[in-house]
Length: 492
Image (cartoon, rainbow, N blue to C red; front, top):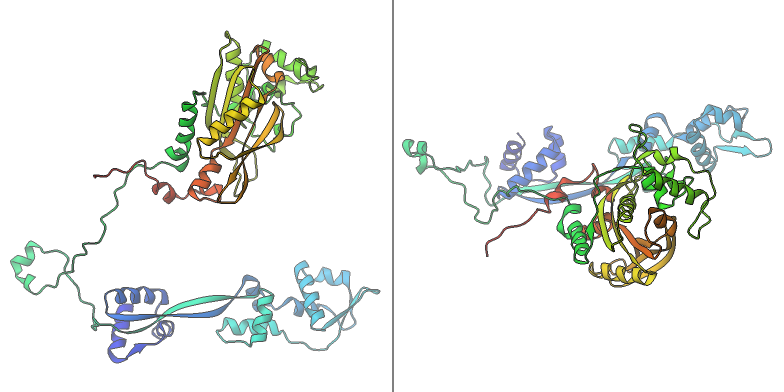
């Protein structure tokens, strides 16, 4: 219908000056008219030129004022001729209407407020709601004066909107009716003999075929990020720790790490605790007693935390808040055998009860590495960190003292980001405390150096993602995943 209207109109007229006016006169949907114009222009039936106009539209607040009137008129009408107290006037009006109405009515000198008596009184007898009248004009498509527009824009009652349309003239291939081109040469065409009269659609030898569907990997699983970290750890001689248990007991997640039971991280607003099963029943009792003692009374050169350690708190099940819970289990198992130096790493999911925003989620992936050997020092930790991050292309590192309950000393790791032109925090590190290691049964001269970082931050930088919710979770754009295939095969 739209196509027929456009072509027949051009048969008798030189042009369609404005597609919007044309659609209104013919009773057509302008969006459909625009789509047909684009199609006809592509085939050369018409020549279309862009038209852009700035129009004014009412905001949500403007729509309200156009329907029921402005706050200043409501405030003026609520004030009786003899005046009214502020308290009584506030009871008659909504809070927002009162605040805005006071400001605008005072500005227009419609009302006056006596601060001593706390009385509002009228200063004029009759007023007109100019705001409502101008808003209705704009809604009806009329053009108000520049001062009215400026005032309404300042109050955010109207907003500019760009209208796009076309002017149309006949093109080099114009015809009153679009020709139908044949796309196939069939057996029936030959039998009927009508193939001689057919006009065939030309071949576009530059057109691409249908894209082949294949498997795709999420960016967090691609070799360029997760596998790269895994490969670096393996090149440095590290073993991967089993991280398949998302549910962990508070004992392994907190207590075994010498983290006190009154620590804020153990509150329900920071940690997800389980209802079913709420507690664990499998803990090594002799080790639990040693952990309890070092928390309450200290030992190994420590004064402890001097509080009443509760077993019921340690038994609570939770979603692990860090993969260091896995590290504590592995180190305990290591201590039950004749000592051998070990290098461990893990890359897996952890959970925090955090407010979700563009840089934080309730679940994310943690990368952790640790080295367990005799006589390790802070210098060894710094050396390993330089080796590890240099393999990622981060050779310019800085370290800042920090605090962690289970490491001493502790350091935050910073790298200079050439794109941001500033130092960016990339991880945390430290040496596990004797209060954590010695109750496990490890020899006194054994130290454990460790560090951790998130998987999401380097992935966001690599893929140019500035909102973590676009990378991980239910709001992920599937197109992002499909643009990252498992592999590409080619013939050379």
